Length: 107
Image (cartoon, rainbow, N blue to C red):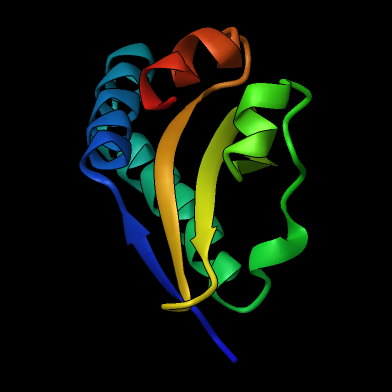
């Protein structure tokens, strides 16, 4: 059974910030749009395989049910709602960041 994939407001804001950063760095809005679309597609793929993500090493995040996948140099954190068949994308950020510091706001 396929799940629906929903982006939390925080994940939508993350995508906006990623697009701005890439557009400024590349000096090309089209490059930024293309990459954000790639990230969104990666999220959509969780609809058919929601369990494919890894559990974080942090025990608090793991016990809260968080999983993550990596796309290029970005981490996509999500929660699975098995009762409603929904994958909730919570946050998307550069893998160079300390993920526990970023994710602390969710626990």
